[in-house]
Image (cartoon, rainbow, N blue to C red):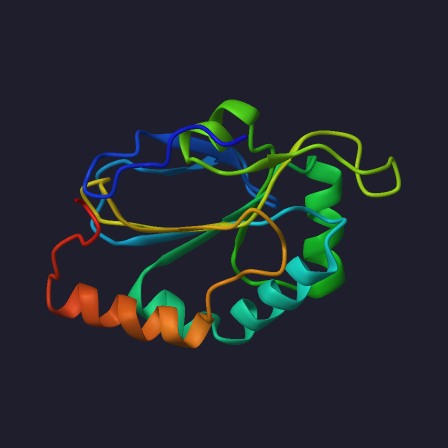
Length: 172
């Protein structure tokens, strides 16, 4: 079961994630000068995640021209590093998403079906657009791996929102 969904227009609170290949961590949800798109993926065990993230990586120059991109899962550092090395992703790949962080984002949390899948709780996919002031502009949350946003459409919409300083929708 998911916790309550995050409120668009409200601050999401600071979330810190350790990053593959960097000392320290990346923080989202704090005041900065750029928008951030946070993508949560299920982890190394998910082939649908790889296809989605490979598409994101192919379009990465367009994304980073518009906003920062952060990708995170509950995987261990070793699993995240293996993915980054195998696929050569250029985005900031983070790991160690905690259950408390999953719940704070309103994500669906799953138990593994078997040890062959993974051994710990993991988050189902989510995409979050965060304004420079740390407030949530857009949330797309799925309860399974097959439902993902169209990256081209999402980027186009986000560029429009940013360029036109569009208000948050879906608050009623």
